[in-house]
Image 1 (cartoon, rainbow, N blue to C red):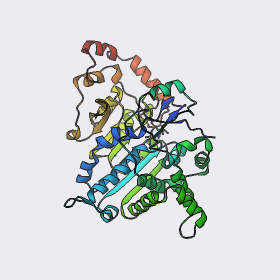
Image 2 (cartoon, rainbow, N blue to C red; image 1 turned 90 degrees about the vertical axis):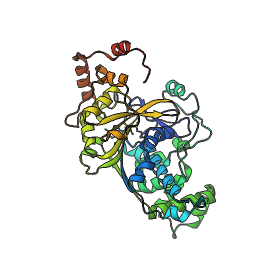
Image 3 (spheres, rainbow, N blue to C red; image 1 turned 90 degrees about the horizontal axis):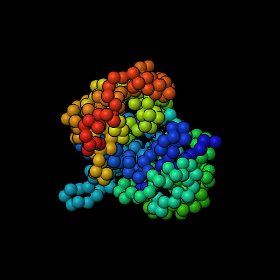
Image 4 (spheres, rainbow, N blue to C red; image 1 turned 30 degrees about the horizontal axis):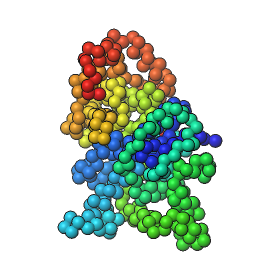
Length: 399
Ligand SMILES: C[S@@+](CC[C@H](N)C(=O)[O-])C[C@H]1O[C@@H](n2cnc3c(N)ncnc32)[C@H](O)[C@@H]1O
């Protein structure tokens, strides 16, 4: 059976480890916090919605959906703010749930069907975090988990319900085995599982009342039913389209005809999954990005930045106020969208061996082959090494 390597990250959301990639999916300081800080906040959605009433977003490497969930959450927050009557500072629920001005389309891609299917169910706000079941990479993950993140981001229950609504029809029996297994129950939200069971029973007016009552009792009827009603209204009135594509991101995008305002690139690190960081893949993304659009990624790698530049983008950095450092890269077609330019040091690094990027001309090579070709190119290169450059340049004062 498919195995999940789950644990709680420091903000109370679930993180995963991948034995194949020997990499963590989510930062241990907080999976949800990471999604907000690296993708949602720098995307400047408030401004984007001022410019456009309809936005299109491509979520590459959807995983268990934190970036999409945070996006929906932010979208609901914008609708909520628009429903506040500025004259008397009062929230008008009718305006919130009948806001037809806004449209959002999310195209999510991942090649792991089971994870994507399970995405609506993961807990994202656990108060007392206990990781006693950690039976993989104990030392590494426990070390990384030291310290606690201040929880500043919460998912609205409506967000989780909306994602469930969008994904429920994709869920297959293999994913259900995991969902209903006792082994993982601590990581799943029992309310969302309950809702899914109701959907499966095609509950509505023909539902067995006994079951419905027991369910509602267990989930604190008032609070939940209110979120549920709100979510249903949002789903009915707001144009929120979601498409899930279980495929290699390269072929999914080759077959796609959409142009996006935002592209989230959240692949495993370039050393583990180079196929989604090649200059050729970035050229493909170039054709799918709006002239005023933005690609966001957590990677600061010189090879990734150089590949973006060679694919035709302007690039800048993502700044995290909480960490007081640069925590990612943005790639754009319109230079004026960049808030934090690359420094002289960053630009110098691109001209070293560290800036040699990955290639995948036919967009179909295996990761191992891409790594091998890259290794050869680095070995045969006359460029100076990054360590020599750093010594010559002096302190790494702005990384
Ligand atoms: C770092 S995780 C993404 C985490 C995710 N954004 C989330 O919120 O949970 C990387 C993801 O890339 C997916 N992946 C790896 N190679 C891929 C490929 N060639 N095409 C599409 N997805 C891929 C993995 O299945 C994994 O879910």
